[in-house]
Amino acid sequence: MLILEEIGNLIAVDRSLGKHIAACTWSSRLISLTDFNTRSADDKIFRGENEDPEKFLKRLAESLPDKVQLPLINYHRDVGFGINMEDPLPTNDFELTTVDGKRKYEGQNASYVFTFTIGIIGHSASDIHEIGLPLHRYFHENPVFNIPYKLLHNEEADRAVKMNMPATVLEPRNIPFDSTSPVKDHMKQLYSATASFEIKVPVLYMKEIPVENENVDLKPLILKN
Image 1: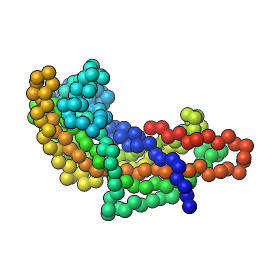
Image 2 (image 1 turned 180 degrees about the vertical axis):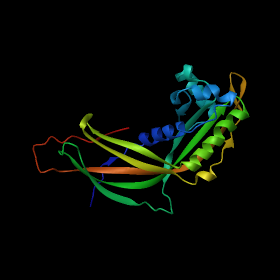
Image 3 (image 1 turned 90 degrees about the horizontal axis):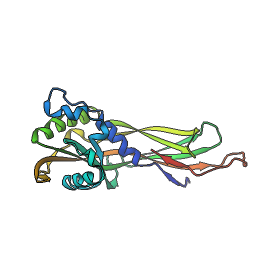
Image 4 (image 1 turned 120 degrees about the vertical axis):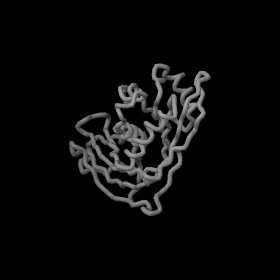
């Protein structure tokens, strides 16, 4: 029986979702989104914690004061997890060999379901609608995105094992954005809405297989996103 010792880094899932959100296209004809569209993804899409919009804005202002420009998007992954009952924990066995052939791994890919929450914060209700509606349609049309797991050995590129695994937004048509207004920032009235939804995520478990050459210096597997 395979003893599973390593697990894929879930931070890679979070960051992949952020990139997937950034790939959404918002209208360039709307004056209120002119600044939003010209900002880089790092200046308008933030991976946060499990907190309400007001606390998020306060923490962002304290840690990155130059980044507080509205409207913006923040998202986070809940700590809990589960399985999709229609797809009960499928497990696929696989074997990998590093590029230099000196390390082999056997592993399993098991599907779990994680809950993510996206928040939109803006100066007006129009900001929420003009960002949220295209984003809702984008998820409906593009529910699948790739997670580039990178398994590196002491950061040596010639020994890297990379795997692109698909994650799937479940029931993207049924993602409701609920109003979480009012939000106050320096006594100004702001608007916000949040949506929670589930994503089916492949979680990797790996174990190193002993190689025939006993003189090979085997080192622990390091997972990086």
